[in-house]
Image 1 (cartoon, rainbow, N blue to C red):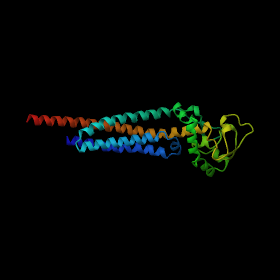
Image 2 (cartoon, rainbow, N blue to C red; image 1 turned 120 degrees about the horizontal axis):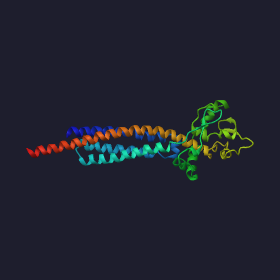
Image 3 (cartoon, one colour; image 1 turned 120 degrees about the vertical axis):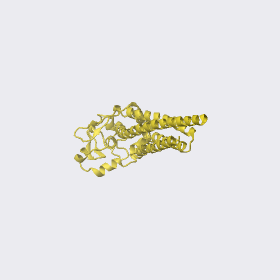
Image 4 (tube, rainbow, N blue to C red; image 1 turned 90 degrees about the vertical axis):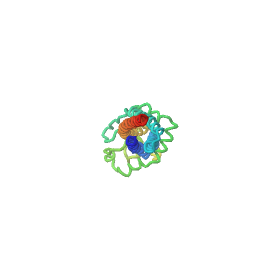
Length: 269
């Protein structure tokens, strides 16, 4: 029984360590400007990681201090958390399955269309109330000002690998036909009614294309890329947690069997 409990304790210690990638993925997303403005995935990840840590700690204490109730709590609660983590991994994969960029003519960067993304992500940015808060948050960052510092000449900017968010929010769509002055200042063509985004462009540095659908699409493209990276971390962690949980269940069953056998021997003697 003591050996099995030690194994369960060690397994739970590993589970405690596995909460770190989940919490870390949430913190990483929270530090990214786009995710910090949307505030959608980071807190569920952080909360889920903390719950995994607490449940694993309960199992660790239950194993070393021989508290069966805590071990049973660990087995039930960890199974629920594994199901939640698996559901989150599948959900993130499904909502980020759509939304590829479109190459801009004679440009190194791509441009993005809002309708290319999943309905769930589109609903996060289409509401005027929600977008007002996100737009204010994005305009307070220096992501567009950085372009002015990095690219002085038009050709240098056209050959730049800028982020989807910068492509959508910091410049007008290429199809509008604006003339480059600097990355965030463009001369309007005579006819700029080819797209509604063309009318939304404003050289005012706090306005730019933050009201454009291209900005919303660029934001979603950034989210998609970052969520996919976080999803890989979550998937690896999920597989490791399942392995740890299965080993823990086997050790717990062996411990119960040893305990019954010991009681049987004591009763027989």
